Each structure stands twice: as structure tokens, then as C-alpha cells.
Image 1 (tube, one colour):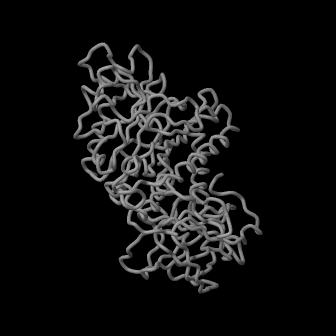
Image 2 (cartoon, one colour):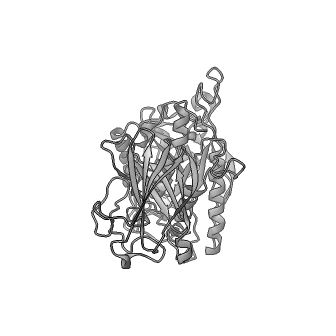
Image 3 (cartoon, rainbow, N blue to C red):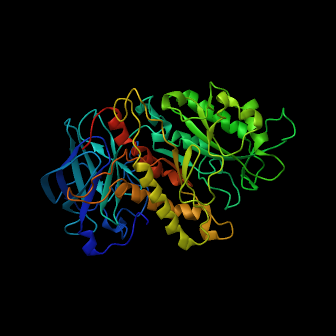
Length: 497
């Protein structure tokens, strides 16, 4: 399910579908068509042949002679009035092309407040494109992702990915937030191909919106109670071929980021792996005695609100506790409990988590099976309604927050090159991206027409990814954050029906 597939001349004339994934109504007001600046630069499936186009992502554009300039003359222009309510999908009768498969379609949108924006399709690269504002100081900024294989345009509201949680209220339970995460988060170093899972450093992940880290550690000297050393590992292997990497600098960097961005939090899932004789009990003791404190960590054994977690690391423990820690917090234990979910599971509820972690993709043919499990778990998360006092629940009888929905996009087979983490991510990430844009939270198409959302906040839970940020592509992360829009609207006490 790659972004670009070859299309016939017939399919190129197919009408486009537009999905408004924002909390604001938008109306298509103008349709214009242009000849491509240089038709030979077009790919067979749409878009341009290089990524050095006028797109740099969410926050800015480069100039390029491959984009349609402001002074270009359209060969056709049509006034239309296609209104799109928030979170709705609209098949249109606007054809992708009329005369040539290399022409460019320009759509102009208007908001209810009078602002206007435009977007050209197909976009000049496979990455997202920021809509161009046509009015000064617009109240909103929008980003579009175009999928030419299905003639589909999805529109998200732009946000500052370094501090995107500032838009959410303090009362929001952490389990209600759609949150990008990474699997084996610090494995960006030179390492065995089956060990490396990430393209960029944890700091760069944080700065681009990731708010869940999956970390595996091994105590360096479990017999010495004064020793706080923890090596970062992936299974039995170190995460780097250039020497051991330590947990302490990772924690220091994370807390530094949170001090600079106090509106944010990081959920840290920690598991003991590696060789040696260390036990879970020893790991829990090291963490308690040498790392955690209530000013910088959330270790209570219940789901915090975002207000309680801001500026802190929230511990999700995938390890058993030492006996002395079982009595913490009035005998309720220590940390959010994810100690022992089922291995290789498509859906398991355990402790404070509900998990999809089907990881044994032993053959490339099983990648489609993995994609299906991921999408099924997205829909489970979509049905959850955030307990907002006085809005979705009785203020006098609050509903407790549910579990964290963890959806692992990761999988691998050490013995098969085509099933190493980067190879699986290259197929799975675009497929998931297309699903979120086109199909997530749609529900059945009934008498009311297509695009009727299912009951729930339409979230996706915590999406734990491999190889995000490769070549600067953060679109999957941005789309995950964008799935908080419906919950934001509900928190403001405004309906969307």
C-alpha cells in the first residue's frame, strides 16, 4: 500500500474524495486546473520525480520551479460549494484530471470564519503539504496528505509538534490521548540490521512529537545495591556496535526536554532484557533507589490525568516488582502495570494496558496479516470515549480512565532479510498511514451516507512505530497527533453531529 502506484488514464480521470479530519467546517469554493510546469518530471502514479520540491513538511515550503506559481494561468476555473463538516468524508464529482494525467488540480477552501487556503494536487512529493493561506494571519493552519492511488485528500489541522499537548486540558486521562510512540526507541545507532529499529535519536523523536518510549535495559552489576548502571539492549544484543549505551543519559535528555516543554509528558515503557543473571526485582530496586522521584516521575499505580503527568516521565513497567515495592502506594504497587501481556498477541488486556503486539512476522507474506491486526486495534481505540467531567460523565460520579491502548507496528524475523525492522516498516508504515487517512473511524456506510463516524472519540491510542523520521518524513506521527481533534472538540463541550 505504497503512496504511489501506476494509474491508467481512465483512473486519472476519477473523481477525488476529500476527508476533513479537523474540528472546523471547511468548504471547497473554487476548482482550478493548470498545465504542469514540466510534465516530464511527473511520476507514473502522480507527484513529481524528485523530493526537492516545494514541500519541506508541516512548517514551511521551499521554492521550486516544479510547483505552480502564483502568476500561472489556469486553463479552467469553476466556482463550487462543497461543505465539509468536521470529521466527515466527501466523495466529490471533482475529477482529478480533465485533459492530461500530468495536469495540476488546485482546490481553494474557506472556513466559517472567512479564512481561505489552497492546495495543489497531486502534491509535489509523497510527504504532507501545508495548505497555503490566502488571508493574512489565519486563525488555523492546515496540512494535507494526498493518496493518488485512491484519489484521496485528507486534511489535518497543523500543530507545533514540539509541544502539541498544550492544546489538551489538564483533566484529559493519558489513556484517552492519541499518542505517537517508538519501539526500541534508542536503537538508532550503527548496529546489526535486525537490532536497529529507529532512524533518528530519541531527542529528535521528542522534538517531532513522539511521546512514548519503549526501552529495554540490563543492569550492569545487579549484585551491588549502590550500582545504578543500566545498559540499553535489544533482546540479547547491545544497541550499538561502537560500545555500550547507557540508560542514564537517555533519562537526563528526556527530563531536559520536559523542563523546556512543561506542557508535555513522556510515557516510558521499561523492560529487562539482555544476558546475565539480573532479575526483575533487582531492576525495580535500581529504578526506585537511583532514578525515580515524585517531582520528575509518575510511579503511582493508576492512570494519571495529563495535568498530573505534565513535565514528568510516566513509568509503565514490563517487569515484576521486588517485594518491598509491592507495598508502595498503600499496598497497590508501583508504576502502571504492563508486567506480562500475552506474547505475540493480536489483542490482550492486562493490568493497565490493552495491547496489539503480533511480532512474529516470519515471512514477508505475513506483513498484510500484521497490518490487519494494527487496523483492528485502531478501531478498538476509536470507540473509547474520554471521561470528561460534566460532558461525557457525571461530575459527581466520575468514570475511571480505561487502559492504555498500545498498538505495536513493529515486527521482525532475525533470520530473514525481508523481515528486518526497516523492511517491514517500509511496507507497514505507508499502509497504516493510508488507513488512518481514509478509513479510520468511518464506521459502516448507512442511510445517512458515507463518512458517518462511529461512537467514540475516534482516537488511535499509543501507536508504537519503527523507523519514523527517516529522511525527515514525520507524516505518520503528525497524523496520529491529528486524531485528537474530535476529543478536543468534545472537551470544549461542542458536538460535531
